[in-house]
Length: 303
Image (tube, rainbow, N blue to C red; front, side, top):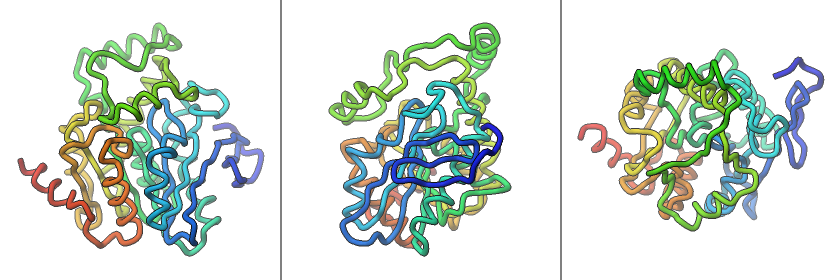
């Protein structure tokens, strides 16, 4: 983030940060006045419209307005593909929440982060200046920090980022499958705004973010709903269980588990079930999830 040059503002199609950086904004509103607002943060190498074709209609049908923005360095932002630093991404999230809340005063505001976006929210929510959010939804949050990578991967990453930081590599490989919805996956893979080659230094930045998210978890005291799928191939169960164990307020920080859920929970074939759980929690954080995913999470955690 650069030095402040302007007052942050929200326009019809962008959030403008204090340093002048323009973050494209997308919004989907229900036909009647919304009863709650969800602000989405996308995952690594994606952009705001990741929530559009699949998830947005499910939220608006339940009376929930959905907004999402391209995080700095992704989508249609300037310096696309350049890692901005997790402190900057967290500061952007806090400012985005302030701007969107001002657009809908008096309504509950829930921030929802998918994968990398969930890690950003953990850092932002535990910071000295957290977003003015009523709660957080963490969709398969990226918490595979250096401790979970293993000795070989850690040292290889450190060596590569020191020698060839700008080298890129394809974002796929054997066994890579983020969802069971093949139609959505094919559409996602053809998206022109998807970053298909990740720089080594961006990957190292993601790992730094995940380390920061793991470290922030014990200080993260806001109401939260963490959702995880039993078929997730990108974020393993062990660091996810460790994250849940480190959250400090079990009474307000709940978990949902979908045995047939993959990493991209809102784009899975059962994505509508997940979206309805999120919308129900945004409208009433004390009510049980419609799908029964909390009981499944309790069984998974003791299995």
